[in-house]
Length: 258
Ligand SMILES: C[S@@+](CC[C@H](N)C(=O)[O-])C[C@H]1O[C@@H](n2cnc3c(N)ncnc32)[C@H](O)[C@@H]1O
Image 1 (cartoon, rainbow, N blue to C red):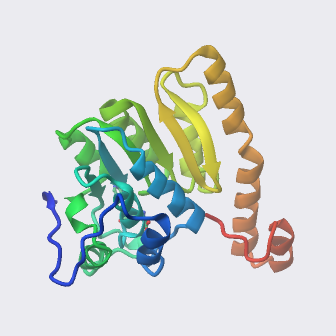
Image 2 (tube, rainbow, N blue to C red):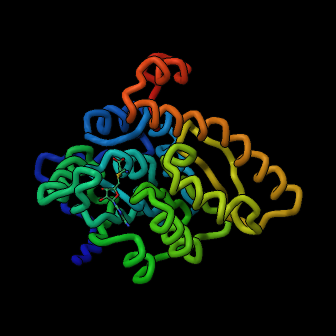
């Protein structure tokens, strides 16, 4: 495992973008061609979360791949704020391999946000156990989507989170492991409440919850279950080659499953 806890070097060609003059459209045009899994409206939510980051806190991303979401979060940050990107960059399930880290570095440099990103090369549990940074005001969970890994992401990072901080989870209510982890930890949580979704990007706020907030949060989570059932059914139909059924289950042609 390599820890690279210094800002990534900006390449000579990189133009450092000034986030306060940065718009979502500029950030998206830098991120759009980077290989990854993110819809424009989800990118907009990440950019806005970066912009809202509580002063003095850090942003953390679990699962960076080639840098698509990192570019969007970092583009929204104040110049003094930092995003820590956590990824081993070698997970073949997600197209990881020897070239992944280099591609990540090249992409964030080309987007002009390398100086706002600190890299932790390793898995989420190693990073959360070693964390010595400020409280985390924004956590983006987009690493491995099995139950055990997602629970480890939540359990490892929640103790580091600032009160009022935001927690976004990708592939929520589409991947079974991620969904089970959300139900297990957040359906009736005294510290985490559901605040909304952009398709499979699910938003939570970390703050002590009142009884009424817990009820509303639980209702919000439960309201996503029909979407979850539909996403799983589409994936199963696709896996079995049932194209007619797949089409009938979709609400629009080529509906994305993220
Ligand atoms: C879905 S991709 C992330 C996509 C990325 N957020 C983007 O916008 O393109 C998942 C990434 O998580 C990484 N990963 C898998 N398990 C992990 C773990 N336990 N901790 C941190 N990263 C992990 C993989 O190497 C892969 O790069």
